[in-house]
Image (tube, rainbow, N blue to C red; front, side, top):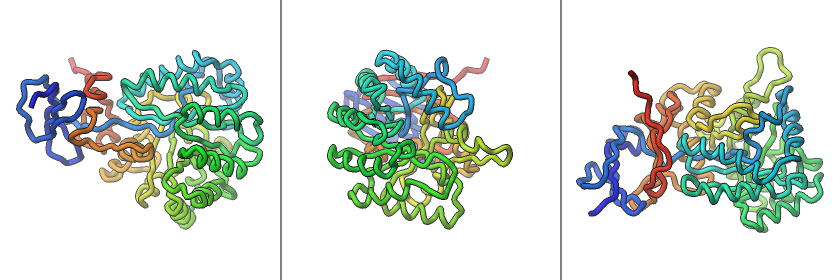
Length: 405
């Protein structure tokens, strides 16, 4: 068979024997222990080949704002207020430029699939959505972008936001998000968003319960509505920092609740660590939900970036292995099996959450990323930076390892 490219000595799973992959016409034409061909050769040198990393929760529209919006208090309210003020001067061109900066970082870190949350309200209008929709088209050569429109500053308390969300969904937004804790009627917002999601037949992804007070939460209402609307498997929740404060019996009850409702969990360690426990002077709680406990119970759990260089998170290089390593440190995970599970939370699990396949099979598009390590556990432990990536057989980035002189 005539091939365009052969990738040699690649590992497709932890502990697997190395294989060759034959690429033709942008697709994987063959996978075998050895492929004889005169085609161009790329030697994977025993590295781990994956479909790419998937970031299930990112904010492109409010990234890279530290030059104009700061949060001296480090609190959630301080961040929301700072971005709310800055947002008054947002333009589609400005949002596009900042979003492009982040996407290019993510591509070079091996991310090939992203769900980005975009704020919709009467102040910013549809400028963020229009800018991100352009980014989705312009960067399709390297990654797939899902657009989740949501009301960061409330829905029922913010007249005009409902119509704008509908307009974005009419114009092709992929799914709908929520932020009940900023609404004057949190349960009312949840109910309205479920009605909209059913009407447009889209998934839901909520920012939820972003504090450490376990005396109340919105998770139960989201679970109730999920079951009532028969949307099991189509609802995700992010942050849910209250989960970090639950003793084992209550945590097990919550796991059972989310399992019954088929709700996925996304943990955002950089933001949650930065913001939680600001009122404490000692024994500061981490505030990061124990995603590994939910993962072990069979739930779909992901670790994601959230914000990059803004008042919510003044850090970020878009490396998902770095984020996974941060979570592993917080959760005190150090064994190979545990680290492998954390790797799953930035690769296979978010692919599943976003409705895509993470496996590498004959006949699939040659969308591939090479890691310079033999396993997912090593990628997390060593924060491995990918060496190269390709989409449909065409290289999208190269980052050769440093050469010691």
